[in-house]
Length: 330
Image (tube, rainbow, N blue to C red):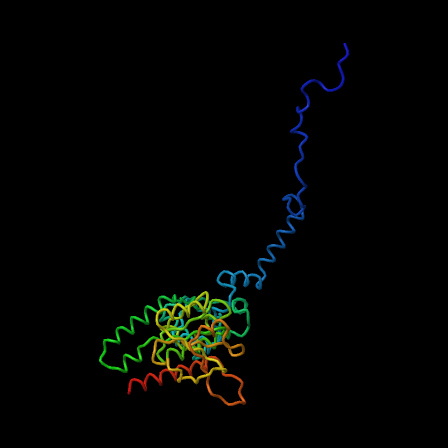
């Protein structure tokens, strides 16, 4: 009896698993039995032993990729350590040729308990993204900003404490004084402003979060340590911050070349005061200018178009301090 040809009943999925594909064929270098696999492994070993790539991998372990929190160069690092810039790590190049500066750097860093790490030239270049580090790099800690409310509360508390004093000079000099920067983007200018504000007894510096310098390593260094004890706050909107201070009884004087009054002669010097400075080129923004109670200018020669923001800050703060001193003597 002949067998029936053709498919039998129920045979449709009988061999389906055997017919499934097994995916794409692996590359030759991924097949452990292939000579290309051995060649790839040998190439990887050569690459891993490359000193430049090894230095890059080691540097990446402790490099943030952001050089704004780094101070490098022997003079700069030494100055930053001397003025007390908050830092956490000192990188020293291996086999560095020491001099008086590097010895003092190591001494101060050790006394402050900084973490000290040794790196070779390639690693140092990678960390600093520059070859001009002179074998020393200092990593500073992020600056801790205060809030506007904290600044105002602290200034009011100090003012109330001084009001109980018998000296009229002490009461007037303790009246709150802030300086606000509108569009100043140079961190070195910011550092100089902080230094001037501390020198003339200001209670703090106010910065907008956008289009403004921040307290980086460069600002820390220029402030000569003043940033350690003068609070700085960052606000989302400078105009609203000014309005909030005005609601607390502050007066606001904007500094601009087109002012109708002179610095120190606005009549608000002995009141709780905010002095606002604009950038050297653009000056005060329109909304900030409109929020000011007075616009004052500094008389300068017609041969000079404008003053650097930090210089203008120093002059205006001196003028305020001088008027307060005169008022106390009356």
